[in-house]
Figure: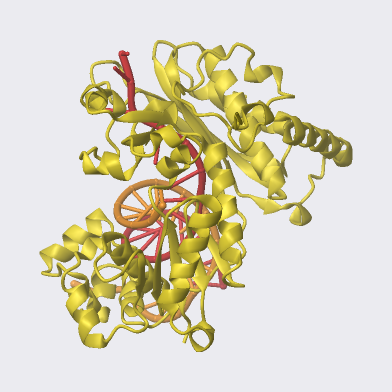
Length: 428
DNA sequence: TCTGGGGTCCTAGGACCC
DNA sequence: TCTGGGGTCCTAGGACCC
């Protein structure tokens, strides 16, 4: 029988911000989405004050600040770096780790039950080491399936069945499990979102236990095989495997809201060129070529009183490519086609689709350029930017003054990723 | 003034094939 | 009155996750 552990960092972004600034230790703190838009993470203190997840910051700012809440812009290079360190530590506890998201990893613990006195104690050692080495709090959920380990993690966080942040279902009796699951809302289950939860409620299924004991065939017919699989996982039958090697992306997207509304095509071109540059870099890192490009632009959907417009066009390429210049050229063509003067644009995005690995490239019959030379150029570009920082070398089309880039008014230093921003320790 | 970004999977339906 | 059977592929839309 497989055994999964799900390790999840508590209030991850907020905790990262507190890590290098001890004065924030007891401060209610929130982290904002790109463009300083919405609350996407809250420290325990901010949660205790009732700051809602996802709230637009401009709406709640005044009240929150009055109560001492401090807001930070998202600092993804910091979070990504800390995340990698957490994974490093976790790799010391299991040979099989799946990095599920920036703040969650699944571990296989099969066989450990024979060696360890009990898995909950092992979970405690994981918690202790992450706390000692990184200063972060994590919770550990353990179960015979991924879905159950997720649920165990939920219980550990809410202190439902776990003691001190660890909850192990593998040693919980069937009766105790049934009793516990009767107290948890069905919406807490991994894979049951708002819509499905509502439909289940209409069928009289309110708790995890009711879903677990529901008629799987009926659920399959009324919903889908996905939810049926969830039921089997809740019953302890493992249907989802550990994915240790992240599969290649099937599409790469890059989009941002602007810090101000844009009306000129030239400004939109700068944004589209910038998004394309970063998407194409990701594409090359994955060793793939894009077979199609999509560009979209839109006005601010929240402003009902101004003229609205949005348009997206996808263009298949005659030959797949990873060359930023070629991709940008096509993106500009699409932009030219969908751009309408007279609107105030709020957001643009690009997508790279139909990705194929380099080795499966189907050359065009009419190809004349030397592909290797072009590839070398992109390689040099990526190496320089990888070594000296993003946009050390950039395309002129990405813009120089770039007055439209997203707002990041409260950005913390790159504590672990920029030499000039390393924290200083002053000895006296 | 101000409302995020980036993904995956499944299903239904239409077009097409023999 | 009555109109087959068995498939594949693609796309759009909807659900979910973080």
